[in-house]
Image (cartoon, rainbow, N blue to C red; front, side):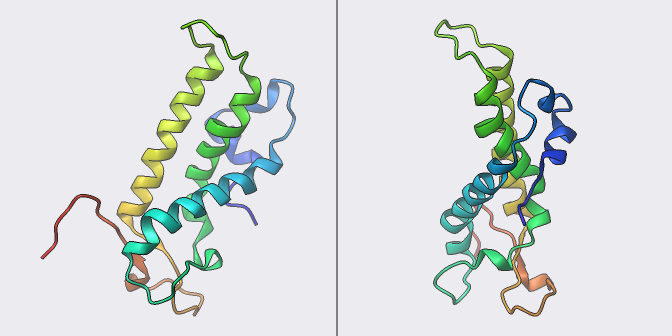
Amino acid sequence: MAMSADSDLTTYQPDILGYGISAFTSYHAKAQADIERELRSVWYPKTGYSAEEMDEDLLTESQFTRACAFRVLGWYALPQLTKWNTSTDKDKFQNMMDHYRSAYFDELDSVIRDGVEYDANEDSTISVSEKRPVHHGRLFR
């Protein structure tokens, strides 16, 4: 199951399916893989979990629905719709791409700071100790 679906895209960009492309289904899995790669490099090494590799199946996917929708919009859906002007003026799709790319990084950072839900002991429940926030740039003693 993917972290997002086309219905999530329409929550943030209601007319996204009205520009001639009726579905962006294949891009949700790509966006999920992008998020998982980011978590493997930014979040997981700082958690202190004993397993060498992060197991993506232990993540709570619903925690990343917004970030995944923003990733699909900013990197996969909207680039297909732009005319890619060579002038300095951006078209509306390029402006939307910038917006959703920024929103993606803000949302992912927010989830990481709040605490990624990761079922490390594989008991199908997330305990407080399994929701580990990562604070960037803060020194703890």
